[in-house]
Amino acid sequence: MTYLTRQPDTRKVPPQMKRSLYGRATALVVAAGLAFSLTACGDDEEPQQDGPVTLVVNGLPPETEKVNREKFLADVAEFEAANPDITIDAREGKMVPEEFQAKLAGGQLEDVFYTYFTDPAGLIARHQVADITDYVKDFPALAQIRPELMAVYSDDKGRVYGVPQGNYSTGLVYNRALFEKAGLDPNSPPKTWADVRTAAQKIAALGKDYVGYGEYSKNNTGGWHFTTALYSVGGDLAVNEGGTWKASFNNDLGKQVLQNLKDMRWTDDSMGTRQGLEYADLLRLMGSGKLGMYLGDANMLPTIVQEYKGEYKDYGLGPIPGGTATLAGGDGYMFNAKASPATIRAGLKWLTYAFANPDPARIEFNTKWSSDTGSPVGLPEPQIWAGDAAKALTDARAKYANMPVENFSPFVNAMSTIPLKLEPPNAQALYALLDVPMNKVLTDENADIAALLADAETQANSILAAVK
Image (cartoon, helix red, strand yellow):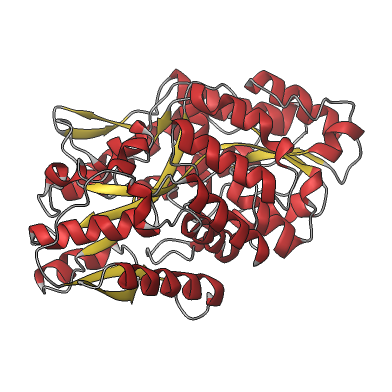
């Protein structure tokens, strides 16, 4: 699901598909921690500004996110002081696909606007965003962003249309305390689905109140996790064939995903009897100390700790089992197709000031600020940087961490080896229909996997036929 990196999500989809309020706020504070002064451009010649510009941007946190909002506005004030020819008109709100076309047609679209990783491809194909390629060379900070993340905001010819500001990728959230209690090595989480199955059995054997492995199957979360598991073994939810999207899960890999869950639920009895779970249920169960493992990402951990009374020391994060690929997402900013050259330059100045600067001193300064204000520091993501900038952020997080960063080492060590995959078009609608087979195999010992996938495929192709 697209959630980065989990702030309150304005999309009209179930909120459990996204990060919790706290987790999303965390992602924004961490991203704000990347803000930097324009001196970080070093000796490169500063891009010329064509007179005064009022830059309309969105992404201003609402008043309910007091700390994040204050940080955002402080960055605006500092930026304007350093750039007297640029005025920032900051507005609340983020991407809402159902409202985007009307906003664009009505001339209400901001100059620089927030998007999720699932948005750029469609906006680029419809020519609804500005091509900023010719300006990027003047902002060397952008060259240090991980290429696979910049590719999300580029077309198939390498033309650039936006700037990422955060990311997440899915791994295995697990309870280190339960691993130790069950005789498992907490520093070596399962690497394959066979390993997951074995570990889940050992954890479930601790007693009737313990769940070895947890899974979703309600309010789109089942389809979300089906997709994640499918990616992990080399499958695709949907593929684009000659410009037409088609379902791609009714095959041996899709059956493998469901059969594994069915076996864990009914043969191993390692998944507990309560099913029909949705987003908060597994976080709550993990916080109670009764759940061994589930698929998730680092930004879920603050919610488990803050809302469900867990302790960071008890949790670890490992790479996605199987490791063929993992579901990833994130967010960033794009530019109004009508933006002038001066506006684009001003927008890139703002983005590389507030969200995308690899200057080590500023990274450290803002990471310390995050820690001092009580925001979680030490999570392995967001991590948009490559090379020296990545090390600077990792070092700063370790220095000011308020959680045991070593617990995430298995995930961090595998990050560079596992390809990232995004959601397909109309992902939420596909997830909703795939809740059905997920729920069925977890609640009916006699569920017919082949029939369930065949029926879902028919419905999915009807949904994908509407993709433009």
